Image 1 (cartoon, rainbow, N blue to C red):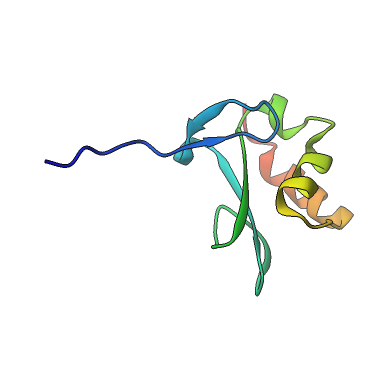
Image 2 (image 1 turned 60 degrees about the horizontal axis):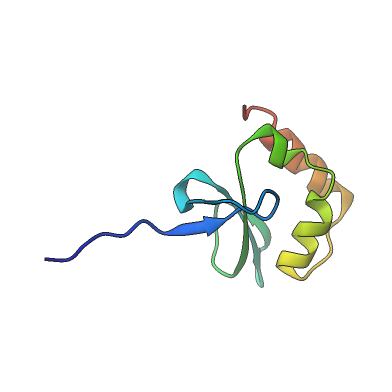
Length: 86
């Protein structure tokens, strides 16, 4: 009998561990670029809380985790996507 384990990932902002399905996944895909909740490749996870999605250190943490730099348009798109979270 196999035991199903929950896969835990750590939020890059608050550093707490959560179930992988409860977090936002931001992926740096070689072919497609930066994807949200899709793709295979180097990824960073962020809580769906307002505190973590609007943190002042989020830009720096994302750049460090994904080892890339972002354009300002990505942050504007990310802000629009996360406005509905509590």
